[in-house]
Length: 106
Image 1: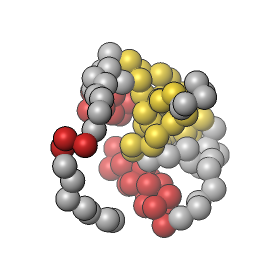
Image 2: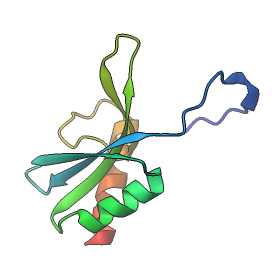
Image 3: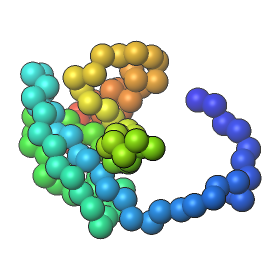
């Protein structure tokens, strides 16, 4: 983890409405179903997902964004796509958080 002091004045815009994508993935086969959630905070989205997840499903949540080409993409904010291959220690920690949340919910 890297922590650096920042200046709150260095951003040029803010957006208050978010679009989240929730992944529900079965354990152990990793079959995925997804749902897009709008008009909700991240906390509301995660709470909703925890209530909707089946006993055999993990949860991950991404923020949906549009790049400068107009294409949709995901910024993972809790867990990640369980079918992605691990590319770094950060990916491994993200998967570990997702699996730990599943264990505590089960």
